[in-house]
Every structure is written in C-alpha cells, then in structure tokens.
Length: 368
Image (tube, rainbow, N blue to C red; front, side, top):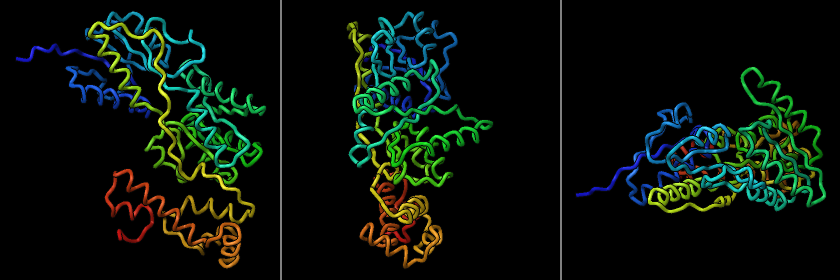
C-alpha cells in the first residue's frame, strides 16, 4: 500500500504574463517527470492574491518575488518558500534567507545587444517601462544596457514611455513616435518585454518608419501570443523560464525532505533568440526598396502582388523591380514569396495549425 504523504504546494504567480506562465509549466514538468506527490494550489483565474497567505495551511509556497509586496507577505509564512524573479547586481536586493531562482537580466540584454551587432547595427537604444517597485527587473535590464553602452563609449538612450490604458493609448503611441523620430538611424532597439516591442512596432507602422531598415526591434519573452498580434514578425530573446520553474520545484522538493537550500541565488541564463523579421537588418540604400520591404513585411501573407507594392511606393512596377534587382539581386515577387514561405515554415514548426490553415495564414494558395 502506498503511504506517500501528499504535500500541498501553493503557486503565487500572475499567469497572464508569459514569464510566469512558462515558470508554472516548468514546475508542472518537474512533478510530472518525478512523480512528486504534490497537490498544487492555484487561484482558478491564475492570478496572484496575497490576502491571508500567511495562514496557508499547506506544505510550501513557490512565488514570484519581483513584487516587493509578495516578499513582505511571505516573510510571515511558516512553511518553506522558494522565490523566483529577476537577477540583481546588488546582492542585498535578494530576500534574506529565502532560496531564490532568477532569470539572468544581464545575459538577456547582452544576448539581444550582440544580435543587433551581428546584423550590422552600430547605434542602440532601449524601450523600457516606467520605474515602479514592481518593475525592478526592468531597472536591472536598464542598468545592464547602460553598462554595455558605457563599455562601448556610447550614450545609453533609454525611453520608458508611460503605462498604457484605453484612456492614455493615443498619448502613449504619440510619445513613442516622437522618440523614434528623434533617434539617429539606423538603430537597434531592445525592448524590455515583447509587449513593449509590439507597441513599438505599431508606432513605427503608424509613423511610416521602416522596420528593420531604419529601426530594428528585439523583445524579451518569446511570447507566441504577442508574435501573432504583430504585423511584422517579432524577434525575441527566449528566457529559460521553464528551466527556472524546474529548478524552483527541485529546490522545494529538497526542502520538503530536509535538505538545506543554497545560500546564493541560482541564476538561469536565457535559452537563445527566436529571430524574425523585426531585427533582420540589412543595409539598404534605395528608399523605395526600404518602403517596399516594409510594406511587404506587413502584407505579404494577405495575397499582395507586385503591382500593389509599387502603388504603395508610388512608382511603376518595372521601376520598382529594377531597383530591387539592383539592390537585392531579386524581384519584388521573389521577396513576397520569401516572406510567405518564412511564415509557412514558422507555422509548420509551431504545430499549432493544420497544413491547410498554415497555407491560408501564410498567403500560399495550396497545401502542395
């Protein structure tokens, strides 16, 4: 007869954020693969609520400590706690006496910055979020960016913008457009999240600023939902969030068996970069080619033809084809087809859609 004691573990996360969602997936992978006898407590809407958490009658808590209110509430908790959050350059910013698993904020920015260097860019900027106690992770990413710019003897151009809501949306977008227009170009911009990167792509489209010929953009999170909401496919740094979740669950399992946790944080590096069109900068000299490629990126999968691209640019089809062949060594039609095939490849790789849907979504007329 199996007498294994079932232990109750509370997960305190906001799973509307992709980082939290992926961490939870990593935790699930851990106890799924190890057969840990855990009953998991999550709010039914996957939201983090702290009221009464100090009275939790379970066996352990794994929580996102990026919000100081969480650390404060759990300081009164009598059960084992494992913290998850961003990494800090200053060790005093970590909660005292609580085992901590962190995403490596410095490595995230270094990886994004190196990618922009690799595609040939020499100017860089960052799109961040307003400084709040809950956004300390973003301030750490800003500091990492400043350090890189200082090392290259460049000015650290950082724009935080404002929080967006229905009432402030137009003001927020106009602020982004004004900032984008002031930047020397071409420029590579690191957004602290994919959500911020998506906003910036929209601002570029509204302002007729070519992406990535004038502004190359890379986000952080590799959020598939955000990627579907952008008209220009978004490049993004992949956080090792599931690895973070597995490491946190492993720590919790050890603590429940009486093993003392490590005194220093476990810092998990990023898993890589998912490269798409938003950061694939290529030196283009002819303005008509830049405008045309910007238009193609947005509408290639909607069945556009060379004539429509030429009409958008304001030249004849033959003229546009001529400058394309001179600048890129191919026709406008070739570039449209290339974007469609890239979209089809991404759709097949994701496995989320049938082949028929992939063909339809990428503007390819047949499954064959």
